[in-house]
Image 1 (cartoon, rainbow, N blue to C red):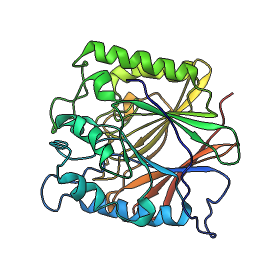
Image 2: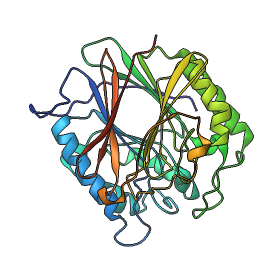
Image 3: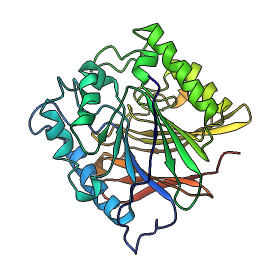
Image 4: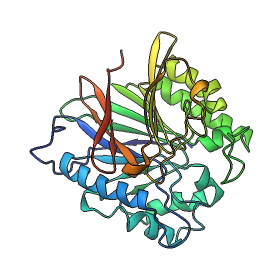
Length: 325
């Protein structure tokens, strides 16, 4: 299941007044946007985030969007013709500025349904890109010969699924050990071979999180050492419904961990605040009144900046990451 997508940057018209305009690779990240399973199939949070994303991308530009799983609550989709694709995705993220490539991965709720149908939807949609359960992207930084490498992984295959859609218990073990080991081997190969100026891994379950679900032991034990060994820049995930930045150093490297799961319901829980490394938490945003949020990333030759944006358009927090050395 090894797949590399080498992408030519897709440029959107950028407002001349934008504070973000520069010779950079811009992309947007959201997680857990999956609406609800009954009419109107979207929540006020999802609608607010989609509306603000459309405005923000129109004004600042974004070459593509990363979607970090839990795309359809509560049981994913049934087949490739499931009306939820239209009800929860197409008709909600409808702003013309959002008609750009979306690169998608699966969350635990997607795995409760038919993930193969979400992969097959790639052939029906002009913007939905979900070629396999796990795959890699190499995105060019404009005006340079450098790339941002992005590795999209399936954390449910790696670690197992949560027990039920109402459970906050973490996954305990993979359903198919061989499939998990195949992906671990593929992932390490991709990390080892990356020549990207920045290297990003994206999945659904968190490595570190202070919120309801907390850290994922499987990822702490196996993914985190790989990220540091191969000098990854950042890990992006959803699952917990808020915005977090945690920073951790080991093996003489620092990796930034971002929870970006606030696109459909905001959860203010800090249940696991004592289960992350001391001093690692740099930001936690979970204001229900702002109706959620997303992240905007801008990478150039000097730095890669990630900014949290709420559904009212406020810039909540920004952090700059340096190129790999």
